[in-house]
Length: 325
Image (tube, rainbow, N blue to C red; front, side, top):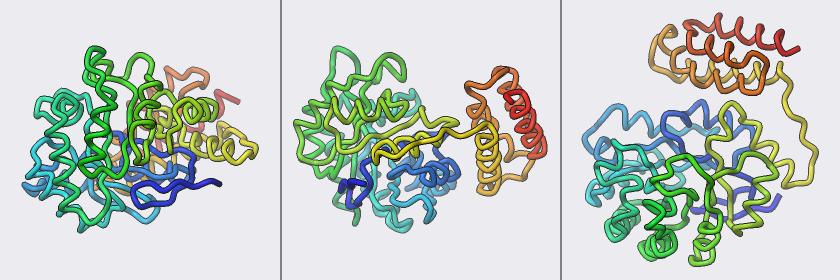
């Protein structure tokens, strides 16, 4: 398998798991890495929250052996807090620090963070410099192609991030205004790749091995990152790894899908600090994704959102397999 050097790490040139707030927690990341994800990044960690000793922020910094290589992602728009938080993250031994400049969620951008930084390139560069100066590991940036269709500034923005000290850049091929709708612009990703000398990771509209190959060919990126296409389908990383090596890939059976779904539920409950009857609620959304494409999927998804015990999850899996036999 061909490897690529990114942020101090030699990783297979297959596909990475993109950071996803509220989704890619420890259990999710472990499962995807086990299935072949080349690397992964934590959920967003508030730089200011970490500095103010927020318990929730600190919990997001956990890294397990099974997830490496792994970076911790900070969001914020104040260089002084980015600097201090970067120093604090060193205690958790991340392989790199990723700065979020792509999140389109209102509560993030109203603070000037996330994709709002696409409108303030100089401030974004200050944040990169602050992180790089106070971190002993590489600093990377996750960005979008611009704020909206009238302000697609990905190329000059990426150049500025490189000059500020970014070791790699992940480009989501949508503007903030697009949120997660419409078609990702791979041409802009290609332009960013040509404009900078640091590694570029492409993100957006890769849903299987064929589209992954297409992104590599169309953009020339160093690595592809997959987000929503992994929902209920961690096997996508195995599919891509097999395709990149020219090996056959066999999709999971319904029995295998449900076995992994139940294991995912157990992992979520094991890592949760809540009692079982509350922890199972954290798994409801995840279980619903495994029902996609099956018979009576809507009815099974409805049951997912009513789960109140692991025993109910087991019964759900048994019923799904029987219905799809």
